[in-house]
Image (cartoon, rainbow, N blue to C red):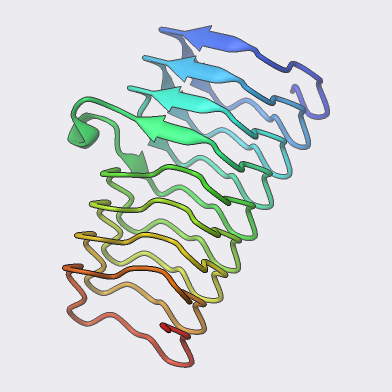
Length: 173
């Protein structure tokens, strides 16, 4: 249990990290490169400016995490799915999820101002209540997604796949 630990600029390289709690940890500028991460809890952790490269995530909780300008990258996003991950109430301003596979993810009430979800697969994801002015969802897959009460003012849904998506009470202007 590493809850509350202060480990800024930590680097995890080619590691298998499973079942660890990082609740409220200070991990600014942490790097996760070619790791396998399962069942981790980053609730309330400060992961600002963190980098997640070629690191598949499964059942990872980022609820209420502080993640502005975090970057999720992979040469082949299909090889780095974010399976069953939760970002409820997280601060995701200017975070880069471009091209990531995030099917079924939950991002309820997250703050994602100017975040980049271009080309991401958010099929059946729950983004309800997300505050995301200026966020980019160009060419993203939002089929069956819940975007109720989302604020996407000045954002972009250009060429996004929106079949069966719900937008009740959403602000799209």
